[in-house]
Image (tube, helix red, strand yellow):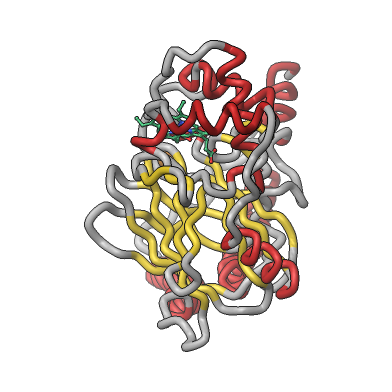
Length: 325
Ligand SMILES: [Cu+2]
């Protein structure tokens, strides 16, 4: 009994109505469609369970063995019963199938003409976001304007990932060599958490993302900051920039005007991100210093090698990078 209670408590501990990854608080048309099907299936299951358990209760009570009672009537091949238990499940399936198929088609429609195009590239173990029409590239934190349709093109260079932001939509697979699409209209400003939902290797569990749905004005401000050339750093940050520019970092990372690597996230405005390492840690100088020093100690299997920098060197670069905003 006690272990059952403990197990139950542990399982329920994962439930939260309004957590940052709640599927029952839809914040886009896509998520609302999914929630609608989810609601139908849940309530249909509840209704069926009530009928089944009520029937079970009646049978258990009425047909209990009583001392001296004769064997109850035995039934074989009851045509009406057989028809009933064939038709009833078929009806249940129909009730589930019609809205499900409707929603499948609705969530596959071509994007609206005024939709904002974003290419989402899932990589081991981070996300790249490209806005081809705006000329912006960023990583791990996607900004979208509220109320405007967005057309995501999902692709990737390595293995299969799955893009999933429970309050906005997904899961939709990100498959190398083909383009999947996901179209949605985020309707309320806020911060929404996402997660890769297809096992993709050592740090799959550490492949998170954030979506910031901004008011149109806040989105315009964010966009302007992404496009601006960051101010020339001074002091420790200037030392960091010089160190960065002559380290192997430049082979993997892009910082507009400084380096043009493509294996790792674009760091042009890294300081404007709230998290480090695909949602893993808050983006602070301390954490970035530790990351640069030995990323594998923070994120198992990470595709960024330790580069043998001393702690003060790592700190100088971290100061430079977190100042890029
Ligand atoms: Cu994954």
